[in-house]
Length: 302
Ligand code: A2P
Image (cartoon, rainbow, N blue to C red; front, side, top):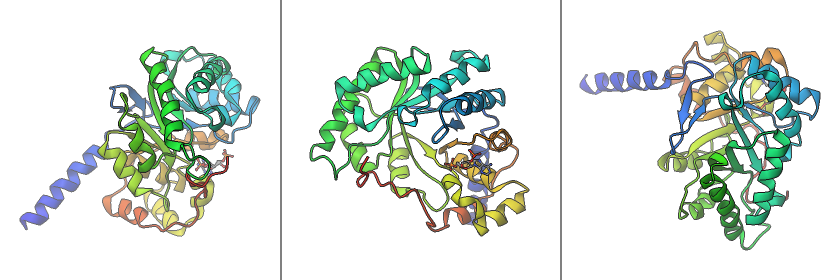
């Protein structure tokens, strides 16, 4: 009985922790105390031009305060327009971008950062990430390249041009080299959705106080028809997309949900009025891989 009671207390305690996020403006705290809004609005695959500017403006009007883009998405100018047209001041927003693979290394990264700021129409970023680690199958000196890119990131951070710095698609063996530097990455943005949890990377990040962010929390739409997820969604009276986003939050993984459809942008933000029970979290965790993007950081050829 004592063991059972203890389990009950622990579960309740965990539910209380999981319930701390109540709105889009609630935050996770990064290692350097910077507050990062708990759901980001993603813009991967969002076409440049009106689609990007209107959808970013819509997301901000609906309450999102965290916008995630990248030089490689080719939409930074329009994302910047959407931000300005929203009427919400720059300081109230959290803006992330990423340095692309062709711009790795110290000098090129410094230039890439300036170009991104210019395109976005901002003079600072809240978060800047190395988009992909230099790939083991492309470079013998991949570790050196990552360190050299990181040196530029650290310098920009120390100059106050970036409020937090991090990486994307880094696995523990990529992160290890950076752990010896003056400033440890504060964020790792990885592919994370039911069926593709990257447990080792998440564990490593949690142990080292690196905030994990989830790209493609809906498996780019692939998870939406999964029968187990549909069953759970029905039980809670939510959509599968909302279940996936909520599941990320309860894992303390920050979801970056992407949609250019206003009704879905709204739907993906309505995840604060329910909590997944531990048994349902467990059931989702157990879902086997049924399709991920297939982009392994050590095998990419871009
Ligand atoms: P769209 O942008 O046309 O609305 P992920 O974030 O996992 O990469 O998934 C993004 C994909 O999922 C996009 O194709 C997006 O479509 C779609 N999507 C986003 N939110 C929802 C939702 N709530 N319901 C159904 N599809 C969604």
